[in-house]
Length: 162
Image 1 (cartoon, rainbow, N blue to C red):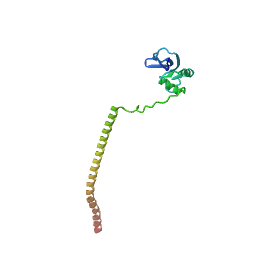
Image 2: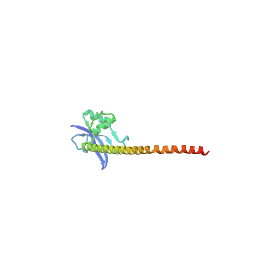
Image 3: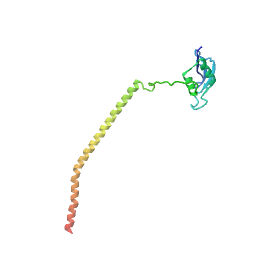
Image 4: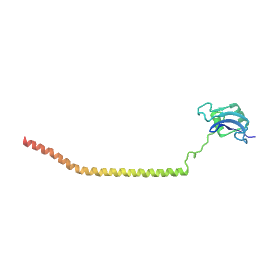
């Protein structure tokens, strides 16, 4: 008989509560089990001591007899220091799908076009400002020269009067 250490669900609708049990692997999830080994209440906060309760002596007995824990129970046992669990590696887990990659490429292309348009508009504005400054610079020396001559004329008039 293949024995599994697994969760048996209890509790009300949308209010789960699990018993950690040793059961024949061919039995139904919530069916008859050999022994209850602990409890798991996912409704409690993760840092609560009451969230996962384990009977370590009985769990060690069932593991010694050859029981295989489910993935979730194996995680609990690893956290409790009863049974070491090798971490799984799935490098493609966080990678987006093909459609998401296409949307990201389109978004990046649109952003690049908008950036180029903004850069071109900035360059055009700078060129227009430079042209206006050049025009103003060409007109300004003539005005400045006239302004410089006026005080000199006034000074000569004051000397002749005085």
